[in-house]
Length: 229
Image (cartoon, rainbow, N blue to C red; front, side, top):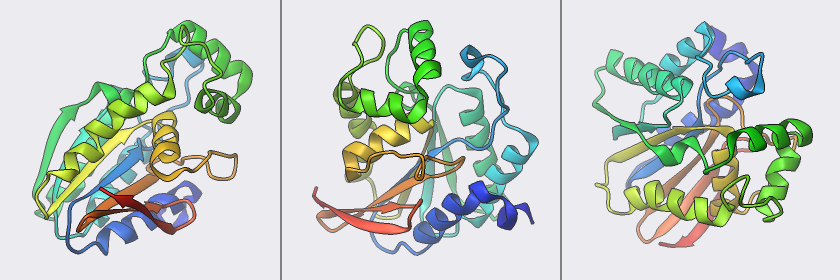
């Protein structure tokens, strides 16, 4: 079974183990889309579909999600994110699980940017140095929306949803590595390095327990209390 042999699945395996052990309270998973084709041109990165393995593993993610919660799924407008959402839905439905596909959410696509300038700078700097500069507000707003402005919207449209959600709710938000990196920095104060980059289907989880939020980091399997809600 590919699920046990692909290195990039280590993160989602740990995340699912955490999600499947959840008891009371609503929770969310913020994850990167599944494996996609590598674009020949950097400008085409948001247009590439999933690989056949990526589709299979998205379905397997759904099959292996076994917590006793009602699942709602949002995704970015990117083809690969939508295919990931649809694959997870198929996997859940195979097991007779109740799931709601809520559709695309613009915030999950990422911050506003000047696409040509953004892609040029990203290509020149590399993802991790680019993110570090963005997180420190060192990239002009003419190129990319400030991280603080973007993550304020992201908080409202992710954590904001679970704060008033029914106890049995699990929200899955399917997005991109830059968004997961930004959310991880803001929610959990975690910087991105070459060692903890976000894998396909990787990300993190946040659960509401009474009046507290607890976050789970799937790349190192640590859990941290975020604080009062």
